[in-house]
Figure 1 (cartoon, one colour):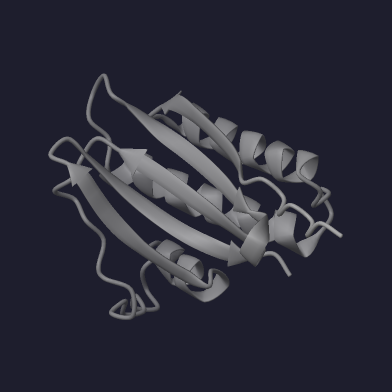
Figure 2 (cartoon, helix red, strand yellow):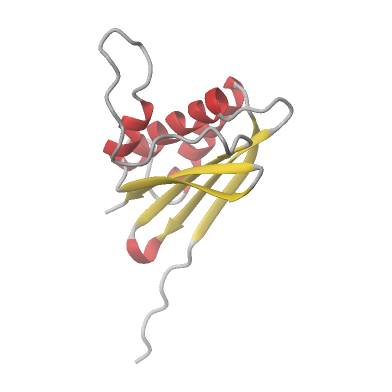
Length: 145
């Protein structure tokens, strides 16, 4: 008897304008893609992915925006270990977030600054990479099981 083949890795990628409209579209496309991959709109996995993409896309346009340059959303489904990797790549490699595990909560009188705390709380792990001198990628992984 042959061993079953593992399910293939699935990938979705798109470039979007570094604008509020691009961030909204990133969220909607991610939600739809996760639904198409088997986690319907009303599931906890889909809700978590939607929130994480929203936070990372908002950070990409707030802190990684360079006039005339887009950001890229990548979703990679790894069925062998039931993990979804979310990556947002922007055009400002010098604007890096704090390292995982070093985030300090913002003061109570500030209305922003909690996005990466949500990313750290809701993902199994996250981080930042700079593979070239022109971009940085903030990524996180979500357990699907």
